[in-house]
Length: 459
Image 1 (cartoon, rainbow, N blue to C red):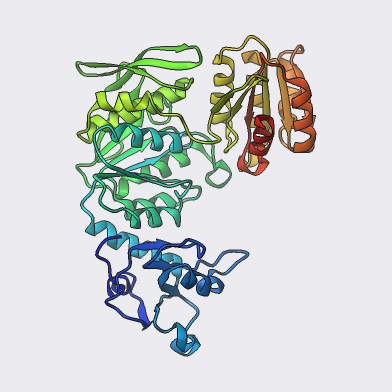
Image 2 (cartoon, one colour):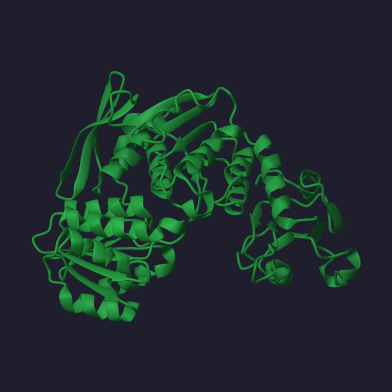
């Protein structure tokens, strides 16, 4: 944050300053008391297991100069701590969000908001990479894309030319709250899948919630949609803003043509009007072609250079635990373990089959969580899909993934399958199974912690 005082914060969230100097400058915001940042506002959040108020003293020790509180009065504050700014609010999370809404009105930089069921993080990183060929860019750090993470990211923007913020949601109404804070000039929706269908019940509901990103946009804003997605392809007249499509179809303003996978890397031509720009990526996958195309579309729509963006994308190495490829002497590991849903599982399996390998293609798949009443059907679908693609070995771990094994055998009896109850057992088996010519994919929901298996294989 720039040029923000304690008084500004008090006014923005309708709080009460219990003690401390209202003229004190505040430059950072955090909900983690262990972060060492001077002139920081600490936001103690109340969760199911912990109450952040108990870490206020630790926050002061790490450089915090101000704190929100919903539990203290002046009499509760020790005299030696009254030099800090204590701001009383009814709800600390709501106060954080109110502060973010206020701050967004002050900053001039344009903001790109990115959402979707699959590919948010990779697309956000690719958009950032492409824009950095022309502009200084601020982007979401890590996975801070929630009701708590988004306001913190917004408040941490500084002197950059443009910001790229990832916006995630899992329940009704969450996107509307996020967009009222972010108010993006350009919104990107990558696709509509079945992630969080347990809470939202149908893809139609998920689509409606994703499109709610437009609620916080001005009428002259721009919405960029994936034209290859069946739920988004007919939404051109569904929002008041100008809609552009990216994809492979003739109706897409931004098109990927001449797509090919060469030695495990994707290449294509990005076409917009009279422009035709060759693009070479360091990773495989049609989904990554679409992610890159979205990034180049954002460049064009925000006034940056598509050509400079394409050059930067050729240098993009991906994100840890998201289809990171480690080609070693003993075998090749594709670590895609960060998270999983049916759409991203299929994308990962396609990458496995596209990767040039002389040996076997081994898929190590864990449970996909939060899929609701049809969770078994979705796991069966992935098992069938893996077998139909021609995966040589299918290793599963978890409870739900047992359904993958059975479904795979029904499609192709020749596929080698094995189920495991523990990561240690799975790791030992893989180390004995894999040969130098083999390539192995690891993918499952974050709770399955298949990244630990990937790390063990790499080491």
